[in-house]
Image (tube, rainbow, N blue to C red):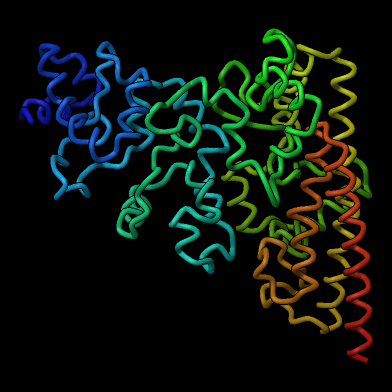
Length: 424
């Protein structure tokens, strides 16, 4: 390739410098054509997708080398093709980049790494992007993390943007469809897709896609509510954990929430914030002031009010808040049952607590069956109880959420009684 490309692209500004360089169109096209001719034979699907993208249009000057570098020129040096990073996309999409970097998706990789037992998982699942890493890869990564991933052979999919705008079409239309969210927002602890798909909102949108309903019919998608006007921050009032500060005025709820905070390791036994709390705060897992929470709630109210009356929308969202309260009361009761087993010496007590609480962030690596039931109760059933309400899916709110919480609490109480009998 022309040495001039390297010189121009190395200048501050990267892609913009390349675009503004005084190259004739024929020269730029030649750079691109080398890649296309080879990959038409080797990876024709990639070429076909790229040809459908706006990037392929000459006016945009976004050629293969702009994103992947120019070091890869043959089958012998494929490893020199650079994986695309979000900073490349930032060059042209500054506004979307700034919004994304402030939002929860940008924290996804860091959040996964912060989980206490994450590094006990097989590398093929985390770094190999087949377990939690398969979705959490959307998060931004440090240069050291990127180097480690490349060394482990998992250096693909570093762009973040391509989680929704799939390579190599990078289609805006695709990313606007709710199915774009389905890949990650499904299953165990975040079944938002299943909830949405079975709700009236999801049903009407499917009928629009099938052509049964007119395209002008009201049918909100995930993006309608969570990415209003294309905002890439993707934030909610309650956050992923369904927890917030300050504690509520309702004394019973405040006590239950404090118990959950302790079981998450966010508060110690004296109610003081821990180092883990600081990590969760940095990851923006929960709103820490009423003002922060009110801002996100008002944003959602504004969206709902496009189709519903504000009174209706406010009441429906309040039902979700009430469901979190009810779920918290059950969750705290279950935690206290297991904590009592620690206090009585029936279960081994973690050394860092004077009156130990179970660590529900240990997930399936919790050391006993009764503690693993707590994990299920918090991470799956509690989530579904309130997420089902907010996503207008009664089935998930009741049968997959609240009902399972009630059943699991009973199971935990029965197991605790059996353990105490054995101790006697």
